View 1: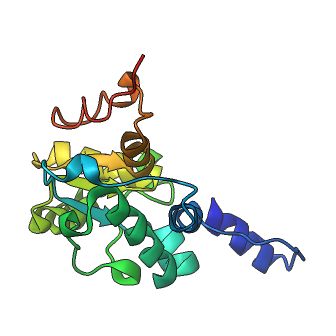
View 2: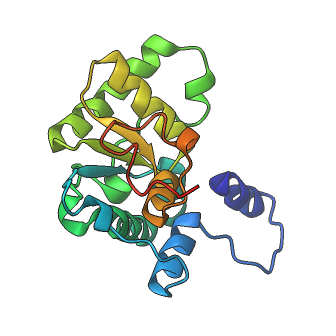
Length: 189
């Protein structure tokens, strides 16, 4: 959606006087300012390993490496710097997951899996327990290819980790998580 807005404004030469920014930029800003008081304390003993997917539309096609760095700052704030393992290549050079641009909903499942195999192999090579996917299409595709290729990693939304860190993630929002995360920072009733 962000890329579509940016490209539409450019293509049709629509004047505007506001900033179009990624939510990752805001998360990073709010964490730095103390307005979003997340931390990685919940993962100190667990030492779960995470890797992060760079969404094509936001990183490669729109904002580039500066926003990729914001995404990593947020991820490290949530899971611990020592627990984030980079895929290679990464940032603006990261591979597409194979699910974006409508491909996820296109019905070409075999082709999507074939393209997604590159991302699957890239994630598996990190040895991470979880892949953080901040984009909904990436999340659905990365989860699907893990299931299809019988991968051992789990997929998690960035906002899920934010909610988990803040202790506001409800029980129904934990159903897709691995057992090791289902009870972490459970809100009091």
